[in-house]
Length: 354
Ligand SMILES: NC(=O)c1ccc[n+]([C@@H]2O[C@H](COP(=O)([O-])OP(=O)(O)OC[C@H]3O[C@@H](n4cnc5c(N)ncnc54)[C@H](O)[C@@H]3O)[C@@H](O)[C@H]2O)c1
Ligand SMILES: O=C(O)CC[C@@H](O)C(=O)O
Image (tube, rainbow, N blue to C red; front, top):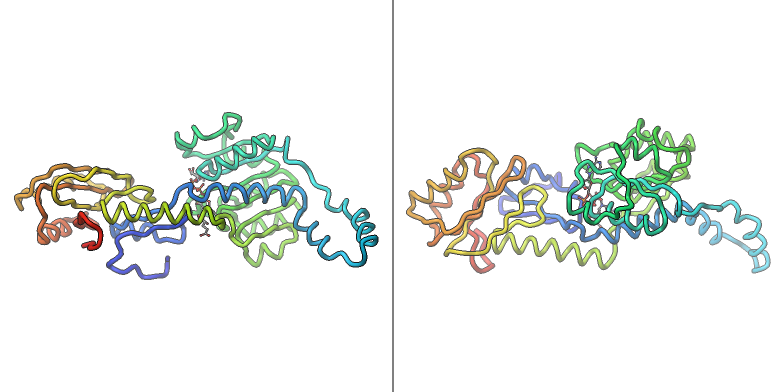
């Protein structure tokens, strides 16, 4: 959506998935447009393909399958070629190997826990690990001291971080240099979290045994040690239904109740309906906003039944239940307050979104 104009009529944007790097989130925030995603709804699908990626690399499955498909001749000849050549595809077992998981969110936690189940030693690193995710994480997962520490310890490294200004090219030349000779790098995150030029250089030097990625680019496809999938991490019927359902539910709650759940740019704001009319206001997180809004309501002789204001970084969101209908001119006055980004009356029944 970065190059698409966002019409004035847009009230919200929902991503039926996890990553929001394809959405101009900051531009939406400035216009008071919540952006929703579907946290965790495709995590199991990505976890399963990540495990498959680890096995693909550890057992040379793609190359071995390619070899087998191209076998010529009758069964006797095929058996002879198989027994003669199969040593080319000798692999290693995951059990006992060390996995480093960068990013312990919805996906990273599941990958780490499953790897423990496979008998791996697992290190994780996430500077913003939430309490909820920490509860979900197996107590056998060891916290790495830093990204450098994680990369230096691991035989396999799996990336599960979002792509944003802070993580763009986070796996750079210096980080790649820290990785063990023969390590496997797995990227089901986004292409941009790895510095591609630096990666191609280390792949050319034979430092990595494999780069397993869900993101096809010319440079990576041309690398013999790259195993490339066509962005299939979330492509399961289950994940698509989970994501679409969660995204739709968040939109319905927002449009019909003004409530915000699962937004990446506005706070969670949930308030049971009361009064006769509900106002939903997105505003800058600066002092005096609630008092200015209240003053407009008081001047219109409108009484507040209930009010909830929450902030998140630079932005805030306010729900106000009034004990009588709010006239359109009051809404206009609220919209004209400096710092108010969007304001609307949330109708009691769906259908007309002012
Ligand atoms: N291949 C696919 O089809 C597919 C599917 C789903 C998600 N993804 C990608 O995976 C990413 C993660 O998804 P998720 O659902 O686990 O998201 P999430 O928000 O639940 O978890 C991301 C975690 O990364 C952590 N993090 C952020 N920056 C970090 C850094 N520099 N170092 C370490 N940790 C850092 C965050 O604190 C968070 O815990 C998405 O943003 C998306 O880009 C890809
Ligand atoms: O839309 C998809 O198929 C993949 C979505 C996935 O990359 C995500 O970020 O959730």
